Length: 121
Image 1 (cartoon, rainbow, N blue to C red):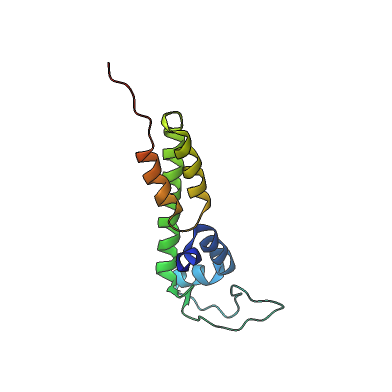
Image 2: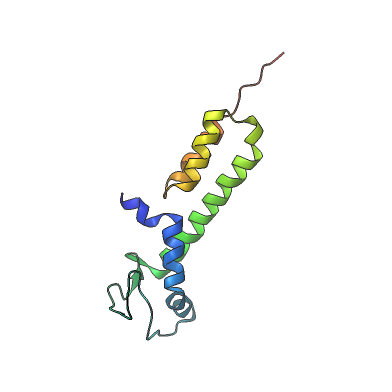
């Protein structure tokens, strides 16, 4: 799936491979040597000189922060509502955190929908 390329683990991996390029971009400095994703045995072939994963460096950085924020909100919602969740919602919400790009969004939706109904007296 195309969105799996933009999942948080892949974004973080790309960030660490291109950390020097990203830092140089925000300092407005040139970078002469950098390692690309998939580069092996010193192969420094430039396949995407202007961006990372087909995105500009600025948009890539924004995407990392947004993905991380959504993931942290999903974790917070699971922890805050753990005792009020149905068993099926617990399982699906944990699996949602471990899956790709839309997993944390699905987790947030499942936590909202999967709360136990309390009896009103």
